Image (cartoon, rainbow, N blue to C red; front, top):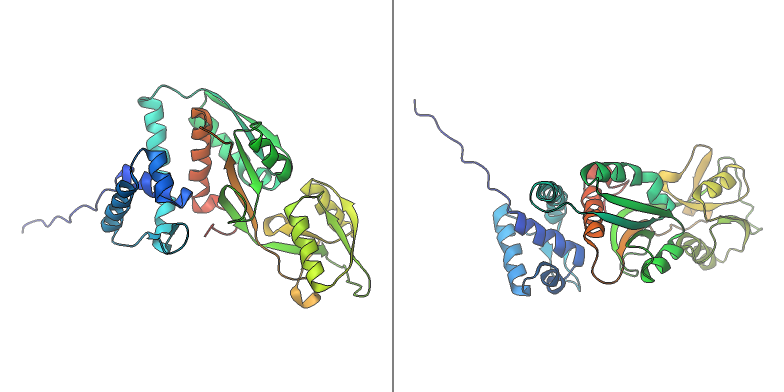
Length: 301
């Protein structure tokens, strides 16, 4: 009997995947073309070729910026992984090794969740690049990257309002000690970070909308200190879901605590052309955070 051979699946072109991933990062065909050295129409043709190849629409062009469709979201994780492996192989075998120091600032929330694994893998892949890490408040880091003191920062932000590429998002909850009881006629005792902390802003705005009075019982820029204050019963705070500890409970809208905006972390680079080392680390972080098991409690949409 003749042997029937199943035709092989199509190969995904690396150049098309790079155009697609860059378009998702920038939200703009024009900006993507500038970064890749192509015209806007050439980028559009590349995206159309990729859509024809996978048989699905990958980008929604109806809004002010281009965003991935559900099929595009699904492809994006694979695209970043393929690009990461391609670039690592080229970097090791073809291009001269990238050397230098990258000044990376990070908010505590991201450092405690993901940074150790990402940096361990990065230093194994690129041993001649040295990350120099600073953990500080998002406000300090944002000012620092704008002043050129950092190459990259990972900061809390409001998607669509603040600069940067959102790489991690999860629910933000009001929390208190497990046996805490709200005395409705009194002010809400709060444990907060110093202004202009984003979570502090969210909490005070929500309480103001509800007409609730409040008083600050604990102030600290360290998440661990706020966690300790809550467990000790000193006050109520807002924590990303993954940082809620045993001995705490989530406060609900039925108890008078409105739903808060999500907790989001963005990757922001300094103004101007990035150094080769900073560009390599930036791409590495974006690639790793696109992998499902590294992308937090909720995938970025």
